[in-house]
Picture 1 (spheres, rainbow, N blue to C red):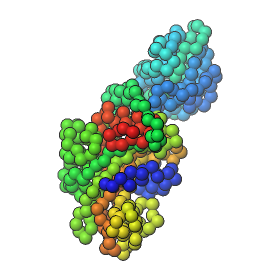
Picture 2: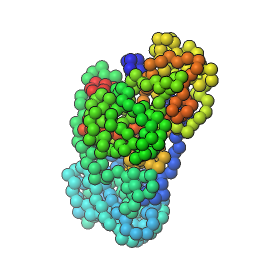
Picture 3: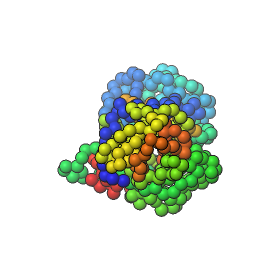
Length: 458
């Protein structure tokens, strides 16, 4: 693909992203009721006494309540403790002194029933974080008012708190279509990422949070390992990029075990695919796709890498509506001369002989932090509309964008997709990056807001 496409990603503005999100058929949904892990950010209190707030020193940690001492407290409203049964309560804490002291969680009032107690011991410093967990065998059910009370027999500050969480053990993909993360593997990946030392950004580097993988067409199959796993031939025809082994039986393990890829860098073993484009009944395969990884957030510092096996879909294969000139969800012409006309049905551009057909597909950039996939392959992710990732999708992930070029200028006869009209364009992403390679790029390029190339260098 010619170099002019490189700047297309950086032109995406927040307003355009909102329009694209609507055009791609993205639906924002509430957290599924069965997913009973609830995370309460410590700074989200409804009332407090003696509490200050500061930014955590670790990437992705957000804010914490700071330097708490005996008698300090916080109130949290509408904390859903789920149904009756065993509950694992956790607190992410940091302490330079360890107290001695405890953090109590009580329901209803400061003197209400004791839910659990977290003994506080030194973690190494005020920003050296550790997670403490306790099993709660009986608890009130449903939404509760929760009080966190700090207790110590000695004066002085002794604990910082980042968040509390409550898990009834039913997360992890037990509901149909929801695929939970391997929490231990994810914790290890995050620890590796947070321990990485960022590279020094040279003077003169373009300060845009971005790196990319440059990919060529690999193969075509009527398969879709996300929508129709294990069912060869069950899909419309797809054009695959990246991992050359991708088929209906693809898994995270099979991608990692098959190092052949049509992408640079070679450590990106991910699978990417789109519906096949046809002109006059003949398949027109892309002459190159750039997969941009960036951020549209005002502050991309909290962005974390994708977990192994993460997948998502952008676009709507079922959309069959006209996309005339001026529509948000449309193909366009890139190169000298640009668009010189429209197809007879108005849905496709006709490009100058010196230009070619291009499409840019934008994926969501916020994640629920719990699931590798969801029943509609979209509900575990969301587009940010506020410049931050919060609510049911609090985790900032790289904003993925496909920029796909086709070696054709088109004609009045137009094109078709294997999924139907131009409006049905969609794309799939199945992550199989090497953890270290992806993590270092996120750390160097996105977190530091620096434009990198396919090699991950400035």
